[in-house]
Image 1 (cartoon, rainbow, N blue to C red):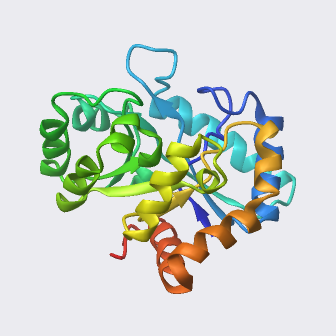
Image 2 (cartoon, rainbow, N blue to C red):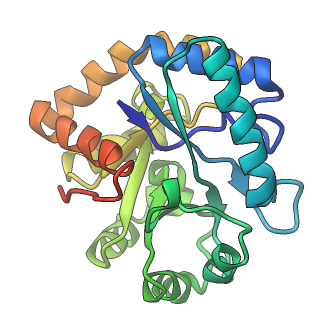
Amino acid sequence: MTDIHSHILFSVDDGSNNIDESMKLLKAMKKIGFDNIILTPHYIQNTDYQCDNHEKKEKLDILKQTLKQNNLEVNVYLGNEIYINDQIPELINSNEIHSLNSSKYLLIEFPFHNKILNLEDIIYDIKYHGYIPIIAHPERYLYFQKNYDLVKKLKADGILFQSNYSCILGEYGMASKKLFKKLLKDKYVDYLGTDIHHTNQIGMLDKFDKMVKKIKKITGEDYYQKILSNSDSLIEDSCKSI
């Protein structure tokens, strides 16, 4: 399996604090069946979370070496969870941010409470430059919870959605769980991810089978397998439509 949303790259954002924590998280991920993990540290302009690609790649190399030394067979790839802004194509060209595994797909985070006014213009510009936005955890955005028409409009515009596995257990509240279930029922979820940050979430991973069972109860086996296939195909930059 492939996880396309994680904060396991150490010392770059609010995720893993050091290489030891990264290794503990990767071991836990391997245990539940993840062989490929795209590391997606936050990139938020004008904050401490704007590590550029050069530094991220240096840390990625250290992590790969440590995996090899520990004989842990997990493939790690680079990406970003990009907080939406109007300079995303320029930031890619200047080697500040990274698409998912150097593909045309970008994992993009929205504000949690208020929809930005120029959202449509930003999305248009991203697509104009040849990239495909994947919206991170749409079930967590308050304005999506209150107005499902916004979700439908983005879907109609060809935007992809990545939901968090743990939302099915209500980790982010009942409103988020309710929207997640509706997204699954409407077949709006293109990817699933752990969005894991720290070792205190390993207990959440221990409930992975329970999460999958609840998700499959809504999706059925075929749709769930298509979601997994979408994530796997990001490693080859060939997303399959659902």
